[in-house]
Image 1 (cartoon, rainbow, N blue to C red):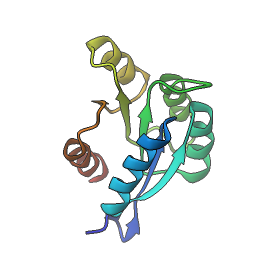
Image 2: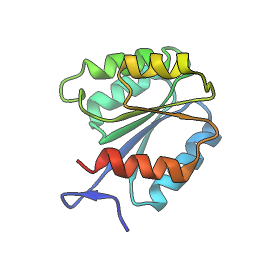
Image 3: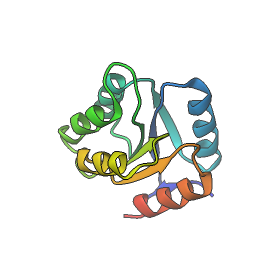
Length: 129
């Protein structure tokens, strides 16, 4: 079943600096019908978000150049990107990191390794609107 909204394929921006993690996310998302675009650092994420206007962003928090929190804050300043769901993904499973991610503008917080069933449930919930 394709991930569609009003007949259009939904686009997910995967922001992750490790190629193996990007590959796994891309495969899972494409198998579930999403169009996937990728960024390997926070600076690239902001540029791609501005150009591509994805329906949802999966944001690793530990990134080179600018981290995921700074990238999220910058993306939230872009026209039309305030309401785009951003899911923070981090190896850190502490309330401090979660609180900081939500304060920066993330809608949800997942820890690595990512539980793909949980991710799929979040995608459906956040993209339902």
